[in-house]
Each structure stands twice: as structure tokens, then as C-alpha cells.
Length: 222
Image (cartoon, rainbow, N blue to C red; front, side, top):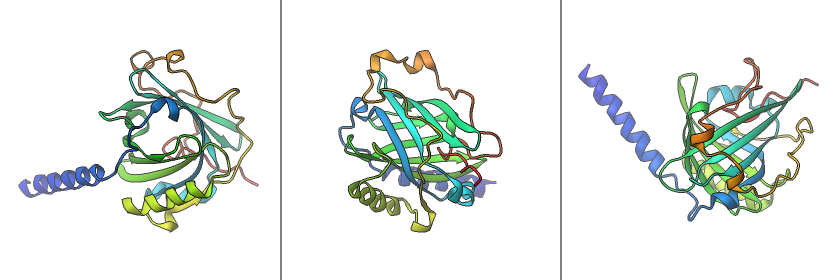
């Protein structure tokens, strides 16, 4: 039993050290990060993701910063029967650009790189169905990511142990329409985490489809 406890501590220390090496965008500005983003590519070592990644579609994030540095995030996922919508609060963890989202199983979220106007590389360490995994997403202000964005994404994910065959470029979909007037949002116009709480609203993806853990649902059958 003592050996099991020691092994658990070693694993915990290793995970902590690994996470500590993932840097956050210097001088991260949550207000500049607000607005509409497209999730144009993802890479993950999650077994569930790897089994479904070729059936995923491009989804969106409409982000609004709060006064406390947290993010209220509205997510939309195209699927066969329409558009699934999920709302969640990204809770700030100490430094700017560092979050957690317990409702989605996101233990550690970091905006690793962004220029605010065209792209962002988002690192997520998550728990899904009892298994821990790493997910990296490429956000783009446009559906077609720039060469600079793709390079930043492709340069980053190998540094956290992810490989090219774990990556997928997400096809476009018109199942979800971008929110009207989704540009930079005013933080004061949105509830704080204390008011909104850590939440996920319905309707969400059905049980047999990937949910917000992947931030993209199943591609509609052709």
C-alpha cells in the first residue's frame, strides 16, 4: 500500500511539473481575447477523440471577459439535427490567461499564444470518462486560418507530447450561424462567475455524440 501511495505522489509531481512547463501568453488581455472565434483545428491524445476525430466539424466560441478576469464562453457545435449550444464559465487560476472549467472536466486551460486579431493556441488538460488527456485547439477569427496561425499551432503541440497523426483540420459547416454583432464584447454587460456560476446549459450534444470535451460534434451523415 505504501508503494502505491508513493507511485501516486510521483505521478502527481510529474503531472505538476509537466503543466508548469506550459507557458501562458505574456501580458494576456482577456478583453482583447473576447469576441467570436472559430475552432479550426484540434489535436489530442484522448482515445475517445482519436476514435471520432475524422467525423468532427468546425465549431465556434463567443467569448466575453468578466471584471474578475474569468471568461463567459458560448459554444456552438454543428450536428446532424441542427446546432447544439453550450455555455460555460472559464474560471481564472492565478495568472491571466490561466483557467479551469470543472463543468467540462477541464483541469487546466492556458492561452499559450495569441495575437488577438487572427489566432490563438489554447492548451487544455482534461478528464473524460475517468481518463486524463491533453487537448490543443487552434482558434481563428476567420474560418480560414492564416499561415502564421497554423505555424504557431504546429510548432506548439509537439512540445506537449502530441503528434501529427493526432491532429485534425476541421471542415466548415453552416449549421450554426455566427452570433449577430459578435466582435469585442463589453465585460460589464455580462454576469460575473459569482452571478452565473460554473455552468453548462442545455441543449447539449446527445449522449452518443462527442460533447464540449471535444468542442465539436459529429459530422452529419452524408
